[in-house]
Length: 103
Image 1: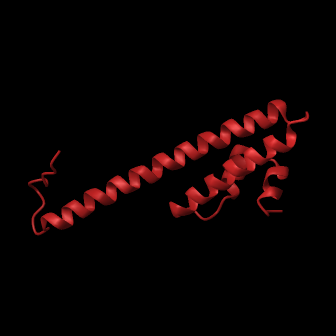
Image 2: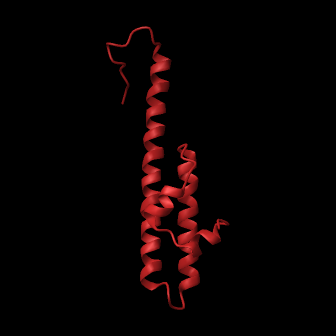
């Protein structure tokens, strides 16, 4: 597949336009990865809430903490440094946050 620059853009070299297209593709992949990480957080927290009182609690906490940690990293890669709003939005339990070193 070849890229053809829009005819309305003048003064930009083909290499600048290709770099811009690559930049858009990278941003799209970052957004998709953030969505997948958020989905994983939702899934692991749902399992923790459903089955988190039994003998598997430590494993479920570990899985949820790993998912939340990955999500926080992906958010930071996207330039989103504050996590307070998503902690409230996902209702992340304190037990999970403590495993991440947050208090």
